[in-house]
Length: 147
Image 1 (tube, rainbow, N blue to C red):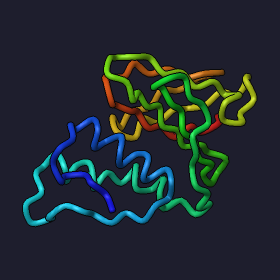
Image 2 (cartoon, helix red, strand yellow; image 1 turned 30 degrees about the vertical axis):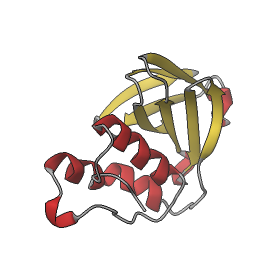
Image 3 (tube, rainbow, N blue to C red; image 1 turned 30 degrees about the horizontal axis):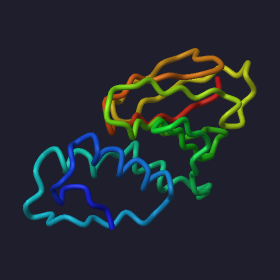
Image 4 (cartoon, one colour; image 1 turned 45 degrees about the horizontal axis):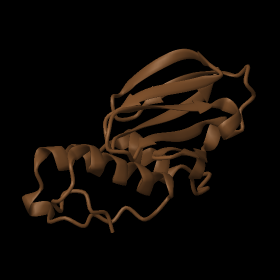
């Protein structure tokens, strides 16, 4: 059951928890009292782009594909040759997490658009790798679409 909104975590920790839960294709059962849910919790739990990754028809569970100390990369295949990724800093200080296409089964020359599902923004013409500067315990979640 999701812990988002139950207290004891920062917003970034809730975002990371939900992102990994979604990527693992786990059932999205809200564990907090929805009658007392604040706006931040509602925004996290109702992000349709993030939920779409969990509900993608391919249905293949994501997994950790790279770890360097407290820095992790998780990935899952999606329909239409897309790939969902989570770049996650589990450490106690800010850090940069990088995914290389070879980490996730893409050819190095592949050019993708990278949709940041939490920021609702897209980087176009990304080739070979993607990096994100992350706060402590934070993550970024992307869908990579080959162009």
